[in-house]
Length: 148
Length: 148
DNA sequence: ATATATGCAAAGGATTTGCACGGTT
DNA sequence: AACCGTGCAAATCCTTTGCATATAT
Image (cartoon, rainbow over all chains, first blue to last red; front, side):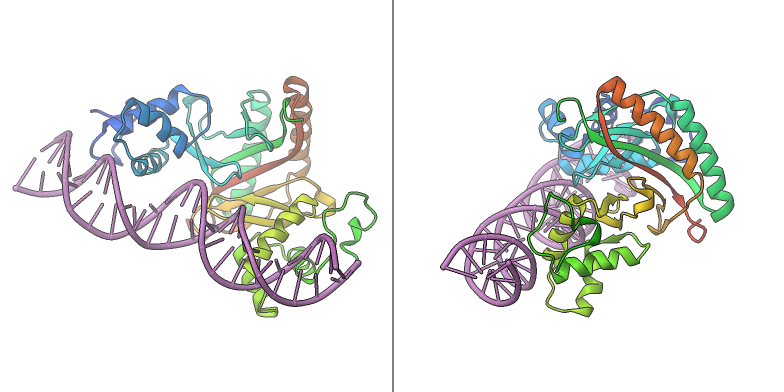
């Protein structure tokens, strides 16, 4: 298998073989807007092809994160979550999280304002602290409509 | 013991007794700018008074979070971290985190810009999604000076 | 044929829970 | 005396690691 389109022509390789589990995990994440944990991914893929192991899920997720195809983050419920990295909002992360039920709302407003602040701050941090900013994360938390 | 000053006159009580471990944990967090894990807190307090248990640390931290005296957050290294909630920047969270060594830099620049964005977004989210915003978290991550 | 990828089981690490003891009220 | 808070040990939960097997090149 050739691997994800956007990676086919890169020089740096993170793997030797683009296998079925890798394809299915990336495919699953690319098709959902949910922010899934390793276990949730496992549960879904296990139905499609029992025999897949949770270990492979974890190892593949690590790989995809390294490749920059997905993002890993945490909402404080004790497990890591993963989301597809869409081309158009590359590196930009933001979430609205319900503290009670864990629901995550995606909002796409104020992207420009956020990005402006982000760029300003990134620039400043790199100058003042010589810190190389690689990414950022903006979260709002509180209670969703149902949980209030 | 009477409990932390700002809580003495509240009606809602989260505890019956303000004990030595509670005092020492809150005191420790209030005096440091570090973002400590339960284990780090335990290690320090154990020196002062061996006999203290890690369980108490966890339970007390939960209590202090509920009381709003400290904040709990995570930087993705698998353990939760806690910081004192200073009166003056109530509810405002932001961190710059080195992905390699885990160091956290505190910056206090752009607070106004951040707050403006935050307020704007909070207002919007509550209107559009009927989401009650209780807090937020802004993180930048990358490589610190030493780790680059 | 050889190196890579996978699955299973075990190990690891953080956090939570059950329970009996001890100190306050 | 009754109850809350604590410490210890055990239990959980998520994630990583060791190792033998299966698979792609």
